[in-house]
Image 1 (cartoon, helix red, strand yellow):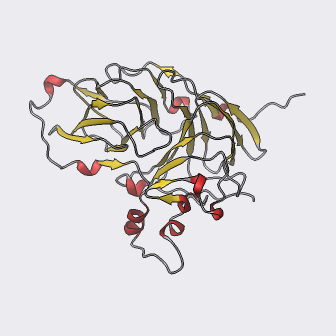
Image 2: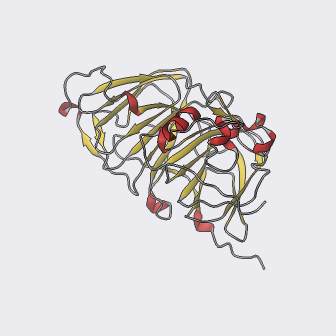
Image 3: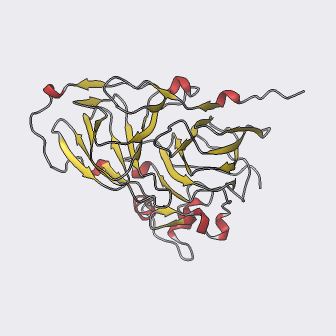
Length: 338
């Protein structure tokens, strides 16, 4: 008799859902805490394929929680390439900021923001948001209620962050010096999984990682990881990466746990088919190594102290992406076994 799986409720297929009125024009994958077993976040994922404005389409919005807006390219061979020029208005002052590199915008609770405007677009881009609250909530400000003129001041410029792994900045914030015989990478491997030893020029490249990192063939082609220190002290850390090869993700361990909640999000990179992932991924969940797999965009929910992994990419027809959202400014991932 086939054994009933215990953790099916922790694996959620992502589907297109109606977004709040006036927020986005394109279809998006959308989930909130009620869809994620109470995980404290609301999240959307999708593509921007045309120039124009969104979040919101016009006017501005205010959230009663902190939020991050992430912008990335779809070229899986160059994680530093965006392929767009984008502006956003921040604050009651309507301070305009323009960027053309992959970036994360840190939006503190209560800060008026928007619209985001794509001014130039070479090819479609990825845009996802996560708000640190169970439900999406927003106070809309109509365009007629905004100040008549925008500014180009720099009061909010610190909220625009490059989408890179900034090792030296983390070390500086900690007030630490590089120790004899250790690299910055080795000192800052906050995950305990070897990722920080693979960072070169702000990007983790696991395919060319040192042997001691013990990365497997299915791990990321390119990956970035930002922590609370990078995100104005928010109690969150997240990743963004591109994946194109089958195989196990880690050679050095099987299951691991975290002292805080985490979700693992697997998505595609085809801007014309948002519900297509292009690969099949297997993940082990729980103490009994219960295996789950999907070839559609999905989320794996990992409660505090919950064993999970290994992750194995079974097959790949088209490069796909994966990102973690963990509800802590740091990231501890002790292996349970070797």
